[in-house]
Image (cartoon, rainbow, N blue to C red; front, top):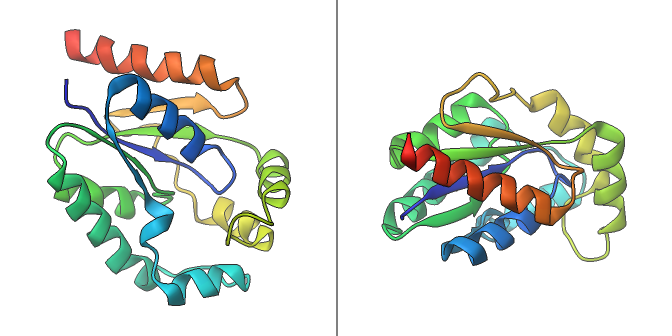
Length: 168
């Protein structure tokens, strides 16, 4: 089966960890969205400057093109915080599904702070992500999960959802 998924949510929610596991289990190509940020945008985030819609526009278009290229299934990590961002990805890749990883501010802040030495994203930006977030919970093709649950449980929840949807 060729699933096309975006693992989304604020920084620190565990998008990459869950996407790696689901991609492994389902045999999907993994695309780490952070790898496609421009150097200018990376520097902004590292300096604690939140990205604007204009800053994200080309990045989202590029990610949409990458999704389109993977006909055998793909798992993409991308914050996709606003509905407009998700719609850009959906336009490039009809039938795209999203896994929204819900987390509270204090847990996200703790996770981002803990990875400060290995990731460019400044912990000072976590709160701005929550301000930007437009919940996708009412949108079609979205599974909402509790990001604080154990990774094996989350992996099972996502794969079960994928296969249940295929049978429906």
